[in-house]
Image (cartoon, rainbow, N blue to C red; front, side):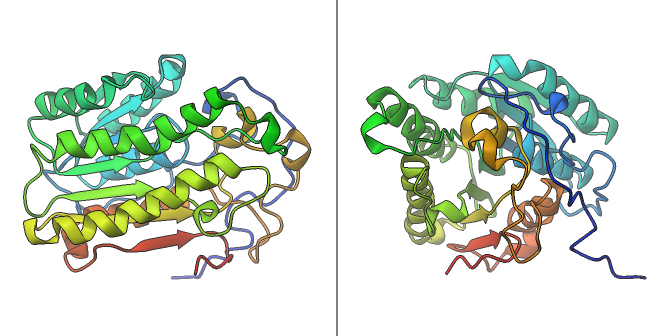
Length: 293
């Protein structure tokens, strides 16, 4: 078996500027992110498990959903109605892997939705073992005086408040051996000046991971967190980064490129699997080399 070169194993050229309206459509990106449709190989690590993934239509959430299906899990994904086309693509990939897929469109900014989403996933899947709180809102702003209250609230509603509500509901169904996974970011420990509100929420994701792991340990429910660095997803091109930063996106990392969503899939699989039975309260960095501690 030959080693792969992490510098060249995935796309490592400059990206084109390609503005899209929020929330962005993955299949319209150039190049299209690799979420594992053809590249992830499963090995039955999640056979029989039931998972709910927010933001599961594209990017990292999509990679987790596809990997989970290829590992033997049934998967429900949440996404915005505007992302239906991407969600249908994920559904096809999950069903091609021989697993059930449940589509749950809805806006996490709607205070009542996270609870109903979890209820629907549990009912449609016939159980719930894995909750991945991955959906994120990221809109850059260089001047805090121009950061609107509406934008601030939206970012916290999606990235923080909806996750708390979803966990509260999920705990009615999760049993010992279940797993909760938050998607944070390197921004949670190394904030950028143009992502103040986003970085705050990602610090919250890390904090709740550690607090909740301590609280739920006695119930046998594990809670962990993934902290990505620059990863090529729709989040970046629909306001997450200024367009003038897109061509060199990820080039400043030690591995000299942005990551592809599939490169994080194995982390989400590990944390959801029984192989991680002694792992809780941890933050896993996948940044291309930038330290998270």
